[in-house]
Length: 190
Image 1 (cartoon, rainbow, N blue to C red):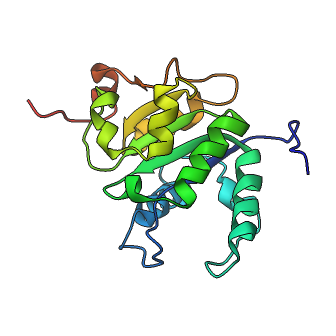
Image 2: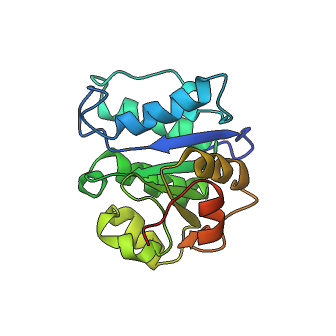
């Protein structure tokens, strides 16, 4: 079946390493749930169209091809992808690499690479050891447009609203200036 290139692509796809766990505190699923909580809270200015909500959910027990088909459908409806980089993301050999490959190679959407363990990001290349191989390969080949940011609500919100199919980051290793990050509440160690 051929992809519908004319699909209405307004969603934000969120990729994270769940480590095969469903416990919301045992993996990077906690960061995905934090994004959803920010989005759903009336008093917080953080809005996006969650691509995972636009397609029927699949259970963890679903067959691999059913899950992959659902992931493709969600990515096909997305304008960008948030890739959450935690301590174990680089170890994922299953879904995260597939999501990265499909998002970049097929959908041509920009990545918003969000690091969970840093106050600010000023040198994305210094985080190479944390990248999944699929991301590193596409950064090396310069086939991805990506903004690298810390896991901070205001900066994530800015990137989701700013980057899409027509307005992409300037390179594979783009980042916001130190002054901009500080204006959004990032405190860099002196």
